[in-house]
Length: 301
Ligand code: GLY
Image (tube, rainbow, N blue to C red; front, side, top):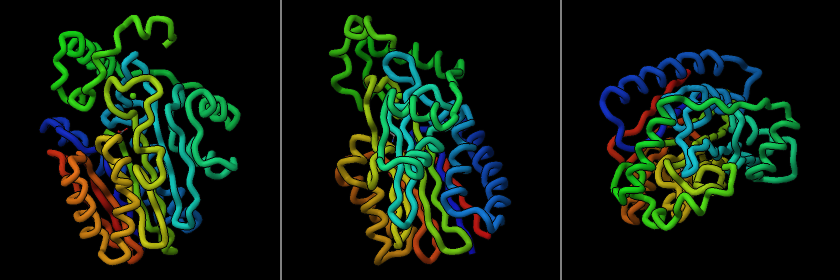
C-alpha cells in the first residue's frame, strides 16, 4: 500500500477559488497516483514531484504563484525530509521555478541543511536550475492593493493582520535596494518509506530576508520512523510550536488523523493560525486546520 496527501495552503479562500483549487488538487492527485505505481520511485521522489506540480500553478502560494514581499518580489522557502532524518531546505531563494527541487539538492549534494538568499540562488545555478523570474499579473495587482492598504494604515486586511510593526518601514528604508499559503505533500511509498516536502512564497508584504516556518526542520516539514507532516499557516507562530515535529511525535501514540487534530488543537490554544497534513507509519493519512479552509486531498493505491 502507498498513500499520499497534499495541501495547497490554508486560510480564507473564497468559494470560486476554493472550487478551482480543488480541481487542480484532484488533477495533481490523478497524475501522482500513476507516479506512485512506479516501483523505482521512492517517497522522496513522489513528494518532490507533487510539490513541483503545485509550484507550477498560479493558484497556489509557492513557486510561480508565490505571493510578493514588501518590495514586490517573489522570495521563496522550501524543504524536504525523509524518515531517515535526511533534510534539505532553501530560504529566501528567488529566480528559480521549483524551490523544493533545490532543497532536495541541498539535502543530497551538500554537507548542509539550509542554504539561503544569494547563496541558495548561486547553488541552484551550479546545480543546473535556470533563471525564472516571471510573476503572475494577478499577484502584481494584489501587491499594489496591499501596499495601498499599508500606506493608509489599513493593516487589518487579510494577511496584513500578522504584520503589526510593518508600518515602521517606509519606502525610503528600501529605496537603495534593488530590490514573500504554502503547498506540501506527505507520502508513504509502497516499501513503507515516508517523506514530506513543503514550498511557499511566505506571506504577503513580508520584509526582504524574512524566513518563515517552511525551511525549518520540525516547523514546516518533518519526517521520522513514526510518520511525516507538512504545515501551512502563520510561519512565525508555527516555528514557536515546532508544529510538524509535535504532530509526528503524537503519531507515536495516535493514528495520523488524531495526531494532527491534537497538534492543531494545541496550536490553536497558543493563537497559531495553521493547517497540517500527514501520514503515519501504518500508512494512515490525515489533515487538520483551524483556518476557514484548506486545499487538500489524498490518494491510496
Ligand atoms: N507558512 C508560510 C510562511 O509563513 O512562510
